Length: 288
Length: 102
Image (cartoon, rainbow over the protein chains, first blue to last red):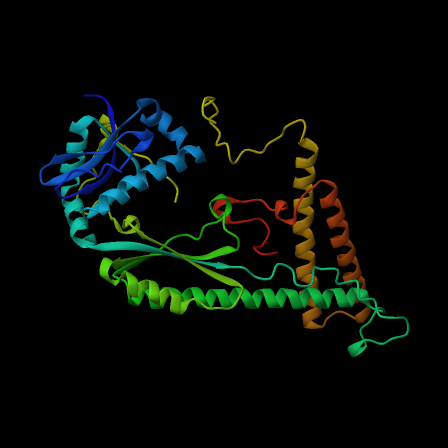
């Protein structure tokens, strides 16, 4: 039993098996591995991709990473449709079913606490983007050349194009600063108000660079843990807090499996399990 | 990047120096540095205008200089087919080299 198994999520035993819709990484079906009152949802994966060394390289490959993340999400989504689940980190791999059982044993306490805490709850993601006026003055602002001899308002005219330019730049800088301040205040308000109607919240690092495909600058990237039956109210609250004015954009995503709230770190009193020697389970760390 | 997995370097952080694009890439690098300096100068100038420590004459001269510099940058950017957003480098955890939204 040396083949590698990809572990998507851990649940309590549930009826009916893993939904057929759950197609795992590489198109292979996901199946349950039950052990000691817990169930790991797994699928077979190719060693060429998931052995420790090739995996490290694979994780640098954005396209591969995206496909893997989609498969991961599709299985987790299918599973949480039928039972409460703790989603595992992307690319958690065990060696054979014995490796899976060991993972369940070592993490038994963590998994059960998380299952209790996350039961009946989903995650909503709220992002705020600031979209300040790109360059209000950048247009052919030099164009309005006053007719000869004509004095423009305030005595600043064609005679001092340099000073006019500086003034325009100053104004545009100030207006930009104002819109940043506005977005900042809204981010705080969203976070405070939404935290009130959620069971938990996590602030993620705002996305930038390659991950930020959307327009605008991501100024808030938060996740909220919400009871399933309170989701409608939560969504309503987000809509209420979303301003109509231009310059900012609120993006709500979900409901997700509670990825951000599955706390699988080791409790401080327990010694860290030594995976490295045996390579029984290695976890890829995908930058979020 | 599926078969040729022997490069240890991450594919997205590599500086591409292709013979066909080397000129444009170098121009981009140089213009990025110039753009950074231009923005620093402008910022400094605006601060000094704000505090009123410059004579009207000095303000005028600085303003014209910055204006011409901006025009010139536009021309150079066009020449190498670069967008304003291209003159920015993602420094990873430190954020973008040039301030956001500028």
